[in-house]
Length: 372
Image (tube, rainbow, N blue to C red):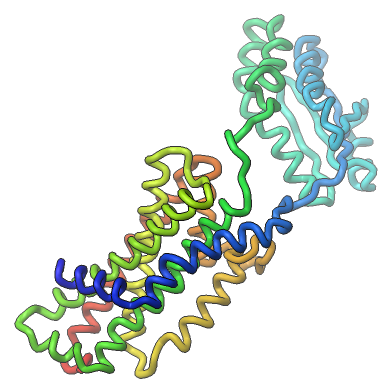
């Protein structure tokens, strides 16, 4: 096994073209795209000013005060205006006629009903506004029942106090397009390098008749194939680690906030590369011509519509399910928000694909005379 890994490492080091595309090229792309395309760093969606009309269906003075405290927290936000109405049917009619963005019915005890308008973006914004309110409803209900006099101050602390729902939060540093392209360029190298590397490995050995000599050895074919899959590790490790190290040291890119987060990110990217390599090694055994002719155009198209080169480019119904997009999404969830759920899911999927591809490839590799 170590012989195949050492051979794979030496092959990368000896080939100056490999060193360029693994070390220099992606690092330059991080710098060039991160600076030249900075003008594309715009919000994903624009939310127009909203007028939200509401009706309060409770006569409890403390609950009304709590609702007023909640709405007061939004008084400094110019984009949102709350207008009270006595009749909720009139509120719904205003929303239907697009004179209001949404309607809110505050019910007793501390419940809400949302009547949505026709603008899907504004509807999402309204849901997000009241999602935090709904999460606290249980606690607020308990306070209303046990200590109603403390309800207004509790709502104020939750929604507008120090560290509250509407308090300003900071990531600790400003994210730039360099941070975006540092992730996407690693994903690009994974798909470009691992697909072509995995597919060309067995194809070139078949073409040069070196595979026949390897098969003639006393080693089991399954063992040989598994070792050749493992031999893809040096390339996947180098192409991930080098881009991350160079982008941090030279371009001051920010990945995850913690050492554990960065290790998890690197593990996900390496396993993704290994899964891609194992999958396309099968293609290298099947095709009788250089698989790069198919792989390169296909990989470029998938990467392009997955937001790798510009987050503004996407195709609804495809982009959100493409492997490149899913890996990028998991990476951004980890690096920007510190959430590792998507990253762990991608790791599990990559391990499954790696194992299944290796088993399928080994069964195919065992066919008598197949690789000669």
